[in-house]
Image (cartoon, rainbow, N blue to C red):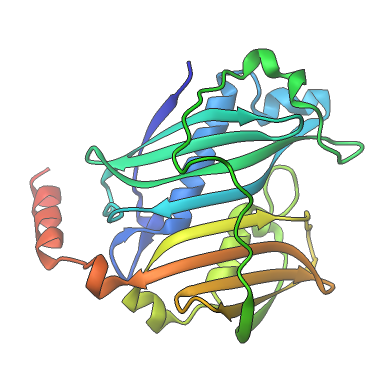
Length: 266
């Protein structure tokens, strides 16, 4: 099985209340869930690896939003596959569809970590279970672009609590994105649509750690860098690129009326 596919329905908690569409952060969490399900078919899910003192971490995540995101209750389908192996890195690529239309695509870089040493293990340990499909949705897997930051526009502090943790007992990827999102001006988000998100996970953080997140402008007018730090050291860096929603991805009242009628008649 080179490509794994799974479908989901957009639930209310994953809807953007400004636009009534799937939140971009929710799309990322669906992708990670599909990846977890995919690894389970290979006997490489978290519960398969824990007895071997191994766990998964994601090192980098890149997603492009190429079309309108689906509304609440609509079905989405995710396709994910192993696309490249190096000595220590495992890459996956993915596509996300709604109504047979591609609306997001991207890739992620994963590591298998030894619980005791906290170091990556060689991928050839599981090479017999990983079938590589040489199909890359965005060209070759390159290093992410490092945007030069200029003015700091906002900063918040956050103490990690239990709701931030995942089953590895370190901070969930979703929490980093949520923290970064809270530094963005709400009026800007209402008038703009995110087009790309690149996330670099640099260091694990844990319960009761004190984090700060600062958002910076860059030389590109609608690209921002969000640096999440602990004790002055960057633990996660996120870059986001946006486009003017009114000009490029309008929210159509007609679409909402069609969707409302479909739900009433269902």
